[in-house]
Amino acid sequence: MCYIHAMILNSLAVFAIFLALAPGPLSAQTTTPQTTAAQPRTPVARPQTPATRPQASSPYPEPATVPAKPDCNGIPCEDQQPRTIFVPSAPAPTVWPIHDKILWGVYLVLAFVAYAGVFILRKIERNTRAIEAMAGAAQETASAALETAQSALLHAQSIVNAERPWVLVTAEPARGGDGSFEITATNRGRTPATVTLALDQVVFAADEAHLPGVPEFKPVESGARFVPVILLPGEAAILKTVRREDAEALCGSDEKFASIESWEERLYLCGKVTYADLIAPSGKEAHETNWCCWYIHGKQRSALVPAGGDEYNAHT
Image 1: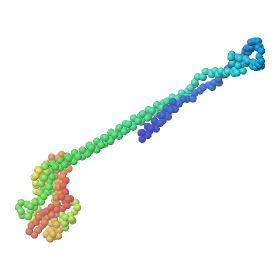
Image 2: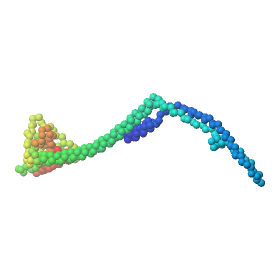
Image 3: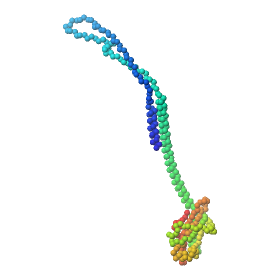
Image 4: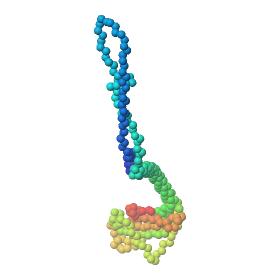
């Protein structure tokens, strides 16, 4: 767009310069050439008389003598023509009206303004192109810097995730071997963790497909208080112990216990552990670990195996 404006102003400048250089109307006096008629000279007749000499007798007749024409300075007088000499008068002085002077000055000013406008527009066009090039280079530099920053952030996040604590929950048989099971939280990370909350509840369903989509845990009773537990890397803590004789109490009624023994329904133990990084700055969001197990109550023996989908075994 700037280039088009520059070309238009350049054409206007050329037109203005052409008008400025064109000659203005000049006032001149019309002179009529004066003619001065030269008076013809009066020819002076000089008679020439032929010399008289004696006639000699001759048997032949003599030719007639043609009289000589009078001459005027060696030229026959009848061939003289009057000469007309034209003397031009001196040219009148050129008169330049004030209107033409003002118009010429205006044209000159317009020519300078047009030239300055074209020069400024070209300067602006060059500066605009330079700014666009700089902006493109800056954008490319910013994009590269952003990509580098994102890569550095991902790398730092991977380092943080590798160095942070990871608390996993597992169900293992108790040491006594009497059909009891221990639900244990173990720190598998590289830094200490503080377990701030542990919740669990019982869910009855026909199978895993009939479990609620998102586990919902009941809030802690007002009288209960969980004591925070610090887990060093590789250290474990028992969250809950499930014994065989506790199955009826977990069912809450004989009818539910009978349906569990006959496998009409299944008993699931679900829970959540909330913990924080011990060396992380204060105010950082805590991590969570969900766990779910299916309690199998047989005629003589019992079992506790992992169950549930991703929602019931999520880690943050």
